Image 1 (cartoon, rainbow, N blue to C red):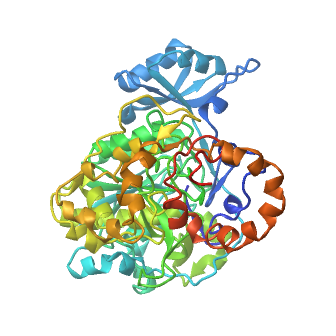
Image 2 (image 1 turned 90 degrees about the vertical axis):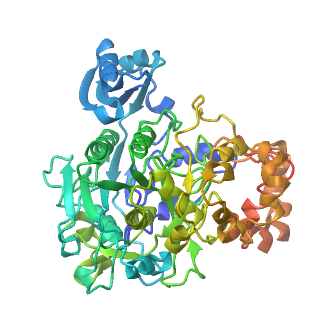
Image 3 (image 1 turned 45 degrees about the vertical axis):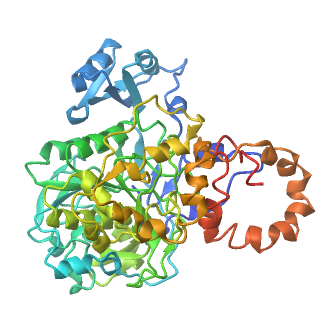
Length: 598
């Protein structure tokens, strides 16, 4: 779950502290962190490459749970047959996704691995964290409807009415803020009631999407206060779920999309990716939802600020991935900053350009689920009698889902590609101005509406090709061609592409619009999820005495240019880092590769 309710650590004390030890590559350090990384309010139990997770044991024949997909086109029946053929047991069928949950021994996993049409993925566990009680440094606020321009749409009669948003989460309490707008749901946890949130996260998310302010005399209102809500409960009182249950929730939404008039799906859960999006069943599931006509909004993750930390399914190129900014409690966006915890692209291992945009995600106020786990654990986070405060990209995703509902009310029949194009083309410049930090910019609904009818982005699927292996070098120029950053992928009113979001100071220099963007610097650039890999940084000057000696510890390294704003401040993820120096030769291996940075 990609969240951090206040008192649940802004997320991220442990996910921000420290860095790779001397001599350790960034990729090794990152994956070691993710074996039990705190992602906002939850711990990912397994987050290492699949080869490490599913490696057959010569000593053990104990069965474990896996998700088995068959890519030959036979759907879940073919996957079930594959499992039976090796003597495994089918636990449940994920019909909408063409997969099954299965109990397999290590020998059976190895046997299935020899079938080129079968993808076997560990049924990754996701469980709630015993969080710390760190607090935020500023007052809670709920100014996101003003910042995003949602209030302007409300004044025109657009509150999201007639659009239903499916919230795949811990359930939604039947509170006055949702009166008459909880239109359906399912409980996949065994607790038996999708409208009882015993953990507290789903209610908070739903309040940001569609709360109408009844609990606070309209002081705290969601982005689309007229939208309907569908509760898809995949985690219970302990906040625990697993990959198979999350997949079942997505499949249920696909199957009930028409009957329940669902237009948007919010997924504020995130799992450390350990497969290419071409193979990852969670990414394939959200793509199936997208192709069925559902706008899928996901959280980027709370594992920033390092590159390659976007979580799945937010790493999928099709869906709308939201990162978190700090709105400073102001209705004006002029003082907004990026949060340090918001995950940063490119995605690992594929190198997709993410996140797509950013929205408020720090110290935002929403609805409290009375008596829930987080309510009892963090009473200091209560505001008044019915509200709560929290931080995390979970909540940025929720606000973006509400924005999508508002767009769908005014654009009946718009496809997911249409909605995504409008949101990205209409975004205003972000606090940093980097495609890998704040994406296309900040959520801006008036700008999205101003793009005019007919705007769409044609990214019908993950581009064909072989799955990206861990450590494999990928061309950032190629992933740029396949991304929403390529103007060729848009159709409709092209003028919006050249607006302030694209031509702001951070993007309008030669580094982006000149040869460095379209020329050899991007054509030659590459990413494999690690740090930079070149002799200039791996040689004696980097690892030897110069690293620890006077040249490193002296004024040249400890002054403002290295340890000040350029190294430790906003410019690490900002224009100084992602500008001309970023546009060097490659991003490859365990350290910097290319002499232009040096």
